[in-house]
Length: 132
Image (cartoon, rainbow, N blue to C red; front, side, top):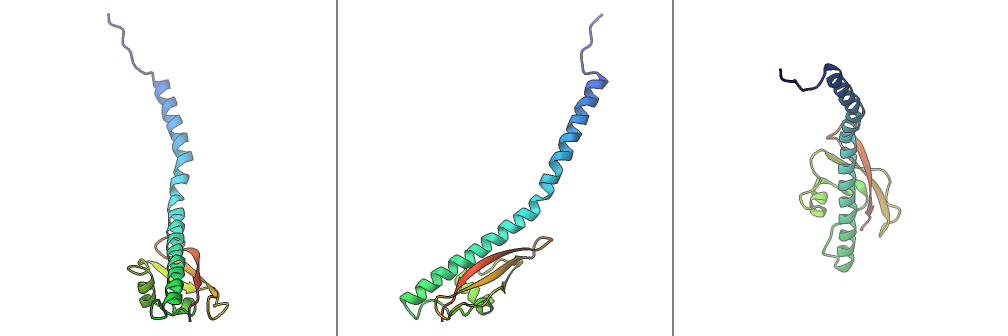
């Protein structure tokens, strides 16, 4: 008579319980990743707007014909942002005023960049250099 080998029912149940506990611990971590990814995307666009604003300020100071006039966040229209950022702001992102320019030339304004692609909407701030 041959001896049969394999797993007992108790061993299989223990493995299934352990996998269930691991899944219960891991699933909330993966569910929250979409919110964190939305915030990271908003921060990336905000950093791009800030960087483009700095480059625009330098271009305007080097040659008055180069660069565009920025009087604060309200002046950042879709056309202006298209000139500052290659391709403009990605769809689903809005740039809005948080603060006004602190001075006419070289002052700063804080703009809010909102990512409306995720729920809840994620907001990051961008610092824009004002150029008369």
